[in-house]
Structure formats: C-alpha cells, structure tokens
Length: 201
Image (cartoon, rainbow, N blue to C red; front, top):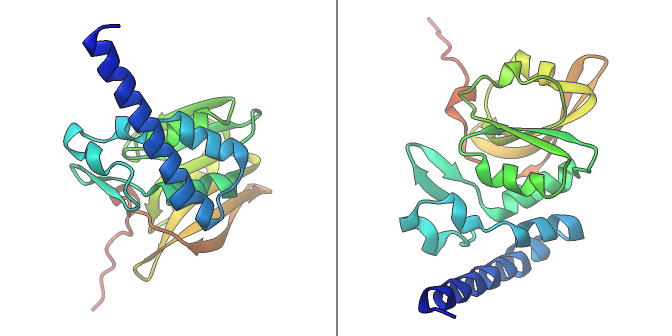
C-alpha cells in the first residue's frame, strides 16, 4: 500500500466516523430513526457538498454557509424532511433548491429516480413527480409548484411564516395543493421564492 492510499483510507475512516457521530448525536436523539434514512446519511459524505475550507464544520449541528448566498441546512433538517416524505423505490423525486446536491444525494439512496433543479432554474417544466423536495424555505408559494406534483403526490418544503421557518407537508388532491405545517425547522429562505414587495399608501 502506498502512502497516498494509506492517507485516503484514514480519511475515509474519519469521514465515516463523523457520519456515524452525526447520526447518533443529531438524528437519533431527535427522533430520526428510520433505518433506510439513517443508512442514506451514512452512505453520503456530507463534506463532499461544502467548499474545501468549510469541510472541518461539515458535520457540525448547524447550517453551513457555502458562499454566494447558498446554505447547506443542518443534517437534522434533512432528516425531518425525509422522515415526513418517506421516499420509496417507486417514487420519482424532484429536488428544487440551491444548493440541493446533498439532499438529492440522500434521496437517491431511497427513491427510484431523482432530478435536481436549482430554485432559479427551469423547475416548472420538469414534468410531474410523485415527490417534490424543496431545499429551503418558501415565503410565497408559486402556483406552478402544483403542476410538477403528480396526482396524490406530495411536497416537502420549508415555509417562512412571520419570520419563522417551519417544515410543511403538501399533498395534491383533485388538482389542488393542501399544506400542513408539521414543526419548526432550520431552513434557509430561498430568494427565488421570496414574497413580492407589497406597496401601501
């Protein structure tokens, strides 16, 4: 074994240990216990989705600033989303958000197909999906969001309500999207879904 290979093995072992610690100290203690979801967190290296300089805090119990206004939410937020969504192998998943990559990678461990589109991208023409995950908080719900959710499909998103971000579950029934707020959660608001300014005189 070369020195480079040995260093890579040590780094891999350290990364897996960090993921296990995150699962035990952040997810399990907060009620995230589904074996498939925990296996997804163990399989996906969180540090691969942050800049090199931010890798030392990739597994901290908080959001990680990525630059350019983008934020990687805490692992617990993603655990709450996946627990509410309960993706299955039959699901076609659309992940909307910036950055979105980590959430999409977790979903790929659980669902049949996963498509990632930036919040500022052309997600409205992504076609229908049985599950839509929004990686961030929406202040104003766009009408087009219902169009990318299949009949009886579901939406998991953050909502901004009076300055507080909450986890919400949406279901599409008879063409309409009905939202249920589940709990407070640590989401970064998405500028692409911010409320339009309202003028008053």
